[in-house]
Image 1: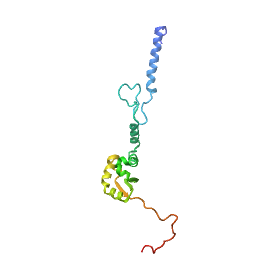
Image 2: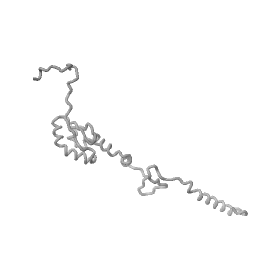
Image 3: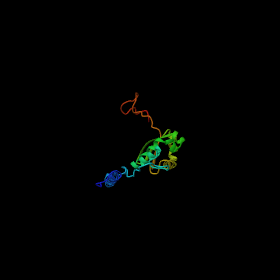
Image 4: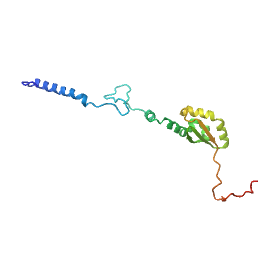
Length: 169
């Protein structure tokens, strides 16, 4: 500061000194505006146009999360079970249900043996419908079986041992 400065000259000198200190300290003090996912965070007002800081649709945010975490395959597999009627159609869904999906092989249980036979005949078109709805290589093979038969090995009228052998033969 000048030795004989007073009034406006003194104020100007103090202001210039503060500006010089601020400019010298600015690069060391500035923090990075990069988020954890590598995207640069924008500062200030977004303005009238579209901006990544604008509110997003929940479905879009979930899609981005699924892609970021690599959950596409499990999500597609869950769609087979959760939206079975939409995937195969209402008539087929009324008479069948998916049981398990392992290594791309879907096990389907039909309501009757006649429907199991019909579904075996429709297997290739069902695979195409599933691929169209949930994606390719989610389901590569279908195992179709009829309803589970009642088990006679347990119950109130069960006889231990081999049972009567003279009944059938």
